[in-house]
Image (cartoon, rainbow, N blue to C red):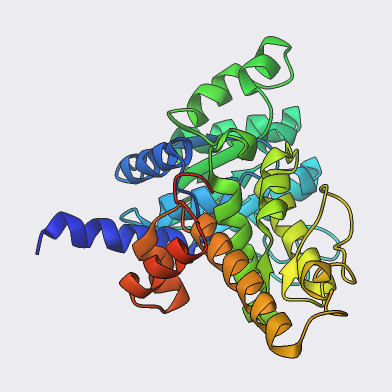
Length: 337
């Protein structure tokens, strides 16, 4: 067997385990870049809108790198004041200040040998930027209350959702610090620019919610998938995941249908198309209900798998030839979902 095939499969499985899901050319290009930059032990600047998965990308870079067996330490820079940043980043000696009853090694020491991920790096104050710049020059620092210089071996990854170069031009971010951080760059496209990934992600998040909460079988109505694709998702993947989870938990039927994003699922009307059985015989209405379920289930699975019949058959746990016959029976064309 081709060694490259095994390697690609292993890489795809790693990305899947890390919730990096997407088959669009835009997102696949990001994953290819992640694979490439992970090999080089230098700083990486990850840029993307809120909710695009910047920390997931940072984790992928770390776990594909030679530092994978060492710590990955994420830091939200927006949560720190000047004093708190210095303390959390570099640690302190016991008794360094009132209330410092125990020594604290700090995040830089905690990440020694591994990767330190600085999220929202644009929110650092001028004083914190200076401290970080000095640290990046030699990876040396002094903990609060200490005179001894400490040195750590860490890789710095950083991220923000703002234009750092624009902030540099305005004087809101140090240009010399920017160039220290921005050696390699990974830009994550917003969800609205990832062609075809919304149905795939929606079905993935639906399955994830069903498994997590032990729910009965549910599927997204094809119309629901079209509605989801037409929405701009300003909160990107995170917003989509939260919305799918809400729909999954609140919908009592096995088919989730909405007419616009933001509304609650039509619980009572989810099965209206198959419950008008006042004038039909039991067998006739049973047959109609089964046909309705089959058609919508098959369509949902085909959309979920991007029209790939083999993958769809495996997902449905059906033999491919049998699955193809069902598609033909219901007039479902993979090129016109």
